[in-house]
Length: 311
Image 1 (cartoon, rainbow, N blue to C red):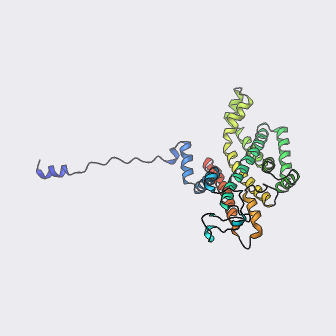
Image 2: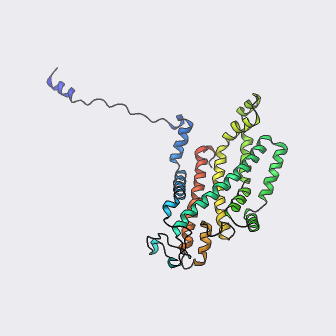
Image 3: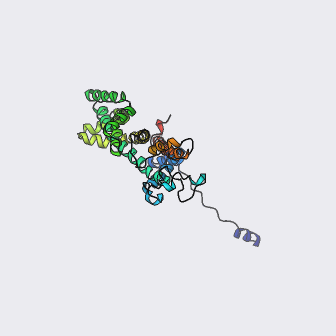
């Protein structure tokens, strides 16, 4: 062999290892497909991001507030926020009683999330029980549940809530209880329809033939397969409850002063709308992003868990 051939052979680059090809989406496991859809869903990621920030702010409110949300000081009343020429001592300014607006906004996130979660949980328990019973048994039970659903749909939520709160007094516990007992109809309707579809499937019939008990069929075969519907409705009703609480607080029949509530902050600032509009803008924007993130998160969960149900 010549020296030229030996040199060319020595300088020859080794063959690169073959690149690892990506697994096609249709060959992924169900969980991997769900994760793939979640990471590509912009609405879901945006809702999850904003919701995570609000939850972190609510959990660590004492560390982020810097001031007592109930502390009043007439010497520092109506201080503007930083972006309008204020100081960093009160980054979002102060209200008419000299209370730090950032502290009240941060603690108000706790109130809104607490009311939304508890009210939606109460409604979910009531509506899910009624809807699953009606969808699984049918017959007279279905007629009775349908009757109650129609009665509930005939009752305007806001007017009933106003009447009850005005009768028993406005407090956090009364508002949560009233909203929880008034927002179950959508859970019942959706869970009834979903249960009617699931009960006709083969694995439910197989469980019944094998002699499985009623609780076993309901909790092991029915509920896990309608859970995605339940989660989506839960997010929608949670946002609905937060909006209703803000409306009741704005009318003076919801959470009572001095409890920091975003609806109450908007109500207290409405008299200064033409002069200090930031008193309404700040809690209004916070309420908007909270409800928007919850709705987008619920819509994203629907798309991620059941893409075949998208419009």
